[in-house]
Image (cartoon, rainbow, N blue to C red; front, side, top):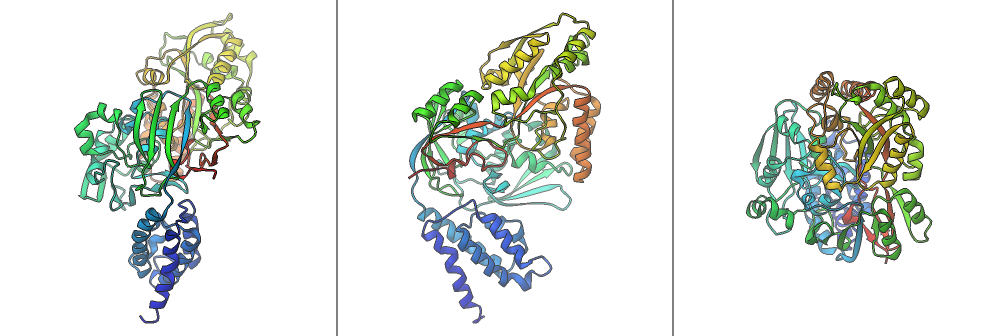
Length: 589
């Protein structure tokens, strides 16, 4: 023991010193630490003999990475559990977390985000979040989840410091971090986790509540989700933006103020506290210095609703906004040519497509597959990409974004307007067809206008219907949009989460479906072999192509304008999200 005490003292100092200096970087630690452990060759078989060497490597790694956030939840470090090295690390995590918060610079500065949509108060409540990525740009500022994507993690431990799946796949247990509090000072406990899940009624609520048979509170920091049967996608739906079910809200506060009161003044556990709002116009947020992951750099965030694309670009140029979300192609091109400003293309899983709402109605013209094929052939997808997206948005052949797991990689339909006209004539419409109003997801005017022009050019006559975004989504879910309309979805997950919402007949946003697709969806949900699941999901996607269920347009890469005051925008740092990691943003000095 005497021989090891000097090592302990020597190793401990570099672990703590960076926190005393305030040199904490929460983005770099994961890959470095896991690489160090792998160099040691630590495994369950040799952990007793290697844990001292591992501790030395971890000490060196932490000294270099200046971070210990969520260390003990790391995949490769689990082999140290129960060893002296592990015990030392847990002690350092507890000590270092306090030192990091105490030693970090205080937040400063004021940043304005110009949003491409009206921000409805419903987005403050995760329980009703639709299958879209846009609400998460607000939700992850105010709230936090047990598990979520953040820099360095596709699905990282957040409010939960760790989780585990039982060997039989019938339960998932989550352990909360110690000392968590909501913004009003209330402790965040397993009771809030259970409450949040049970009140959840947003996207994927049906499948989650059907497959989760109960939520058990083991103790104030441990909660278990019991499943009806093994389900490979539980963490996909619960721990990513495939749904907002994993976001935790305060039971006591919500019970006191009710749903409407919560939307007026939300209380969360995220990096920023809600301060005030002008409904539909502006939301003011302030950094929470006690946020578990890190103290945010920027003190105040102002979220402004600016639906007009050109106005957002002008605000960026005049300095009224620091980041302008989802610029239209021509505006993005101008911003990219302005000194001191630049445009960042997102890396999220978004895609545009046209819905044929009446294809299952034998009395509708759209029951005829040839008309649906004509729509697909009428679209000049590459030209739309270049006009609206500066060439960043690849034309699509299926409505599952190509960046998702289990996405079928296919070529888009060719642009063939002459064949589109022939198909219309064969279907009994030699002079074209009056297809009525065409609703298009708000916020993307160039895409909408280009699609309308292409359809009209071949004789599919449509009139663009202007809608406010909230009304568009409500009408879509309530099945009030008829004929043809263009929509988009950008939430993450995988091909199965897209099938669940849009393709299978019970999907919240599906206008119809087919028994064989429903059966394949059930099969893949129960299948634990990834290769077999992939084959089933490929088959579903191919069936949607063969039956021309949709007209895919293009994968969206949102064009985000960044102003001259921003030193670190963090827009592409969060897996499959177009929004910044707000707590990591930095201003120029």
